[in-house]
Length: 202
Image (tube, rainbow, N blue to C red; front, side):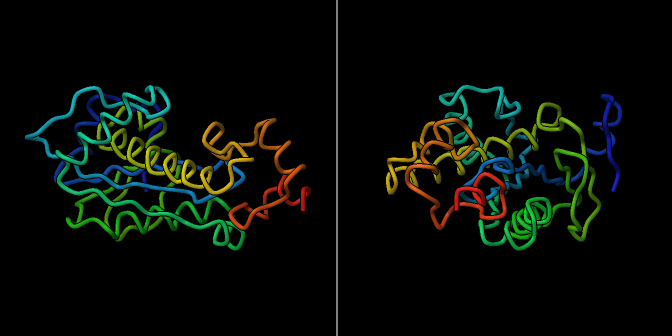
């Protein structure tokens, strides 16, 4: 595994060859719900403009790009790890497992895998960890958008079941509103019991 911090245009061109997959995750920090990953193989003959780190895009722009990626990408797969798996494995190892599941779910076997961050699991093909890759490599940007929209929708569905927690607003992150809901209403099955604020609320 190669870890790339200050990656140059020449290095990007060197690793972005063949049918490579971009991989990113969303949801390592929240106190509730799955950690969600996505793997995307884009079609070089059907480019998508406006791709970027999902955190730098408005919700409306993310939703539009989500639909366009679904239409134009050669292959998309979403993986996740549950709160129970996060509690059993820890959040890092659960995230790596979710990334492996996303890549395994691709209908096209990638020639390599490019991951946002500083480490990758074993995918059975060459992989590169790229610091801030979600703002540098289109396939990783696309994966970040897919993972973000999927997880946000999961949080909105959970909010419909438990409106008193306000998940549709904070998406499960450790905010004041979330802490107050934990104190008032207690811990849900979907909460990550190994995370300190949840543990303390139990």
